[in-house]
Length: 325
Image: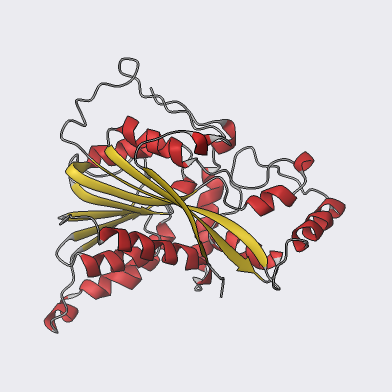
């Protein structure tokens, strides 16, 4: 039995679908800069990992930027992109399918096959042991039960295969969380703790998980620019428990004033906790005994003290500042 997430982690999936449809309807991808930077860092990690994948799954591929990057690194691998937002996949198809066309191959530019499909992360239309590498860049923030997703990844990945992902940790947007009035309800999206994700990987059947965390600081000229980026990435709060009403004009103006007090060198700081992780599927993944008989239980709850927990294979760091151009 897989435990349900705490209420504050449960998401309004219908709302997320509407938001991603709105994103797909726009031609600009200016708000995607953080995902592109994290993809670059994930790609650098692959320099240190020995793997020659036959099939690659980009889970939560969006408009296909990372599929193009993975094709450059692994030109002989079949690439598959899956996302639950059909209109984003349509844009990915327009971007990627011409790149593997017969005309392009005629002129000597090699490109691996690309397949695109609409799918839910916890219900993948793939055979068991069919994927060598799963890549999931910033997909997990839109999932309210990571354990179920990791177990599905473990089902489709072959023995010796690798899952590599990035997500955001609970300190993300902490300034915004602090300045909004508490009496008006929680208005900032919840993010799972790094240690809980590592536990979920092991419970799902993966081995040797390595999790890295770094704190990045984005800078914005105004609070409205931050909100525009959040809307542009469907990253504004989608919790089922989110407040439906406004916090009142006085409360809103007070919140803006409190954030202005944090302005430094003409810019407003925004903390982003970037988590990257990878793990391998061992030969005995299917035969591993589940805790408590046949039950795998990982509870996803707010964990303000999680960083004090000793967990093998975890590294943390604070080293970077990203400036929003």
